Image 1 (cartoon, helix red, strand yellow):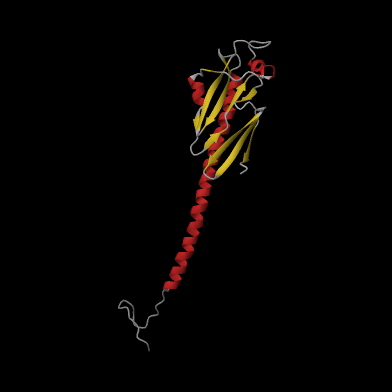
Image 2: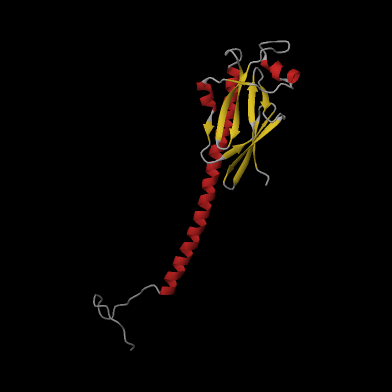
Length: 195
């Protein structure tokens, strides 16, 4: 009979069972692998959630500018509509100036900035502080780029700072990227970035 070390707390001849060092090392290795998967997918999920939250802020501000522009038709002196511009993680609101003259109709800003006056670039004016603060926002995690978008009632006419017929606002949170597309009719769609 080989020499056995007896534990004084156990009765003589008791059956002692324990895990070996190799078994313990295997368990630790498996747990480490699972933890590694969990941490990397957790970061990706956190980035996705931050992206979707900031994407929603951009879309909300676009719709808010459009609603305010339609609501201000002929209500505020000197203001012809509202818009937003994108710079880094800031969204800033601005007011579109009512022109001093307009073809055919002095009250209809859309005729001035629209097809008959398509060569007229947007002119801005001082924005009522409560309105511009409602149109301004700070993105929590993302950066957005894409120029500016303005809405001129009554339709509302959609004007882009780039001068084109649509705008693409690119939103990035680390490795997650997406585009908010606004067309000439003010419709908003989203898609992923084509890298």
